[in-house]
Image (cartoon, rainbow, N blue to C red):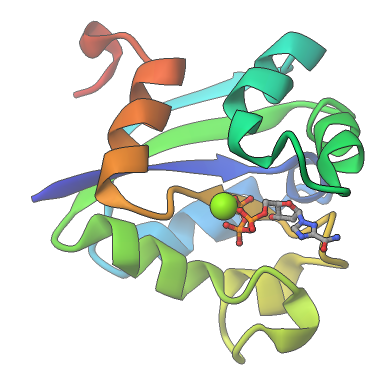
Length: 137
Ligand code: RTP
Ligand code: MG
């Protein structure tokens, strides 16, 4: 059993498709072990995406992530990290495979609907960043 972190980004929350995205996870064998709606601060977003701090898109990424509320989840299941990445599709929705969350709900490489941990190691770090043990059930 693995756990991974998922974020429904501000664009998808604004589009009112939280339920449709959660359904993709539940329909594909992932369980919602924790879930909360949060308005990230600039400091939250900068710390969460610190690995990208030197990238040219960092400023845009941070301002996009704080442009409205997000929904943060811990997903649990077999191969949860990879399964979530497969369900999400490619970073750029134009390149995302048919039927993936980004192909169906994302508008651009910035407003790309969801975040998902990219490794088991990062999943643990990201889950600890947002959730206390008692919030994960
Ligand atoms: P995420 O971390 O949000 O799940 O996305 P990802 O792994 O598919 O992509 P990553 O390389 O980690 O990049 C994080 C987010 O930064 C934005 N980005 N913009 N303009 C660009 O070239 C560019 N590249 C990445 C995307 O919003 C991406 O989700
Ligand atoms: Mg990433």
